[in-house]
Length: 232
Image 1: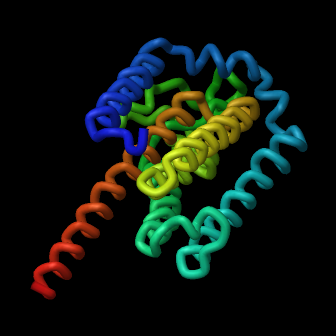
Image 2: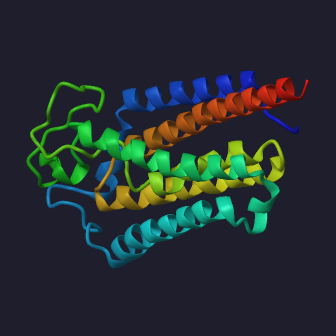
């Protein structure tokens, strides 16, 4: 299959949205949080391998890859050579914009992290992240998951590559999703996020990447039409 149809993308995204809403409704966020934390907090909060390897190491690696994609837009190496300049620019831009969007959404959200809840030794009480006008008594700014975006931000590579290298596009997508889930899970164990924070981060990054791909393709089409009319 060379390209996934728009209809398939719509159905897959709609199904994913319903699944995430079902997760929110299930109340499993707290169930999972209780696996790793209790009234005394989260024992793995300061675990060296989670804090220094998964958190700081993962963040630095993600920024290094993002920088490489930015440089690769003008000086492509490896698989980036398969892409035209505008698609390389799309990949770099999508990655940076995804990280920025998640950061902006976090800054306006009142949801606090699991380690801030009274149940886990903090002061806040649990409030759904959809209760936008309601505060939970904690510091907030924990939804969506910023660290998970260090993996999910790269899902735009699927759209950049799918026209020229569909197999690579699918592998890129799997790697980005796996990285986002792994980084989100590491924060889950520390008490930094609920699973829904991670899952919705992936959804936001996916929808942004898809929207930018549509806009990029439309702009590319308009440019080709303009060039055709110019030489007619």
